[in-house]
Amino acid sequence: MVGRMSASAAVSRWRGPLSLIVKRIGLALLTLFLVSLVIFTISGLLPGDAAQEVLGQSATPEQVAALRHEMGLDQPGPVRYARWLRAMAMGDPGHSMVANTPVAKIISERLPNTLTLAALSALVSVPFAFLIGIASAVARGRKLDRALNVLTLSMVALPEFLVATIAVMIFSVELLWLPSIALVPQDPTLAEFLRAYAMPVMVLAVGVIVQLGRMIRAAIIAELDRPYVEMARLKGMSSGRLIVHHVLPNAVGPIINAMALSLSYLFGGAIIVETIFSYPGLASLMVNAVTSRDMPLLQACAMIFCAAYLLLVLIADTVAILANPRLRHG
Image 1: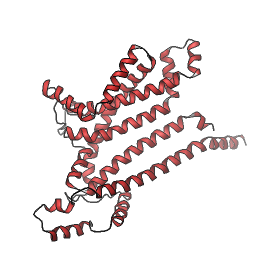
Image 2: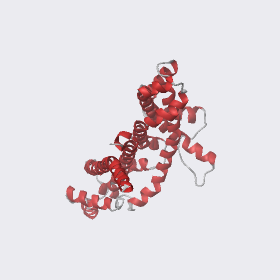
Image 3: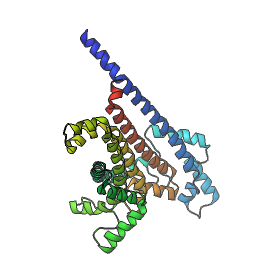
């Protein structure tokens, strides 16, 4: 009887958080559906014609019309959207109109490069962001806090292309330390690997560090103003133990959300960084697809970026819900 009551209490305890998580998943799927509609519509409004790009300017109107019919470009928009969405849901983004190759094969060759770049940038930026955020929050109102605020605000105002241009001018042109093109050779040594990724990772990490650092600072300051912190200080608890054992666990929800929003920046910033440094990733592939009017490839790349962003936000929401004791205990 006691075991049955405890099981019922456990189910009741987690019913609220699980229902919220299910709602978040449903909202993410609905958002992804709406995003797919926007992507398909906007890509169809781009100037130019894929059939004309494939055949060249010397093609006759009859040849262009025949190729458009073969590609299905002469069908109504709703029909093409329904067919494309069904294929995407089944994991088949179609064939590239330009390369005449399965889009999945092209993306599978580029996606690991973008994931590697994003993972390295996150690995570099998250520890620095925590260091800046915690140091600035602990030294709130003092010289260190003001200096870090001025530094982070100044870096937030700099766009990625300007940071990349400055980095190239300093490390490639003046100092000759790093290559201006991020090409990773086959079976690279550790030195070759670090040299190839140093510049793109540096540029991407700058934006994440300053944004995430400021969000972590705000989350920690909000916890430092709570009554339990003052009580712990009156009992003689050291600042380091207070931050690690009490403040950070209670601020995990806002910090996880801040990390998701900041790391999602890696996908948007990668478009500029991969283009500037000629990095063979998914973002530069999407830019090439826009230039060549390769709609299946463009739509698939855009959907991957949007799905990755929604996945990060969903993970952050789930962690925040599970870490909230008020939701767990009703």
